[in-house]
Image 1 (cartoon, rainbow, N blue to C red):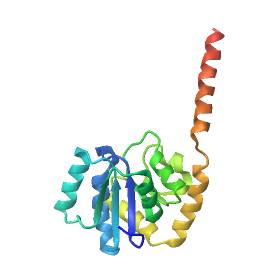
Image 2 (tube, helix red, strand yellow):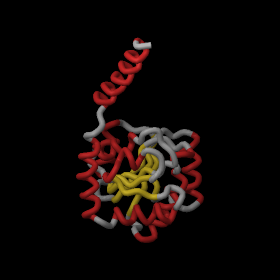
Image 3 (cartoon, rainbow, N blue to C red):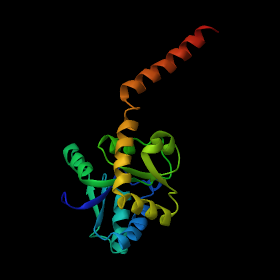
Image 4 (cartoon, rainbow, N blue to C red):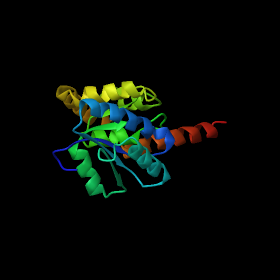
Length: 187
């Protein structure tokens, strides 16, 4: 991997609900139109990632899908800076922090239309049905091939990520607890 390569990036674990097997299948379709691309998967090399590595070998993509294992924050920041876009194909999420992290790193996001992701990311991402490999590939290609769209997503992502912070989260959580405590005292 060098800064001149065109990388699609995913950061996180490879649990089955993260839907990486379908992402790899969609990436194979994407490569038919954009053979210069690479898919970089960052995450702990556990049994789930090992299964994916076997799948990648079975379909002949071992030279196009890169498994980094766990990496330093500095290396991760470099991957974000050099990636073309972040792909988040999850079937279910509690919140969707990885997409916000990508937005904070000025990386356009394409992701699943499931769970809270459309509510959290709003217009700062382009969405696909995570069970439809063809649609996933089509959306990835759309963003890969459209410089104007990628720039719009970067701008929207920078704005969207400002809506979220750990400090704001802590304040809101404290407010909920204070409200509950106050209601209990009124009984």
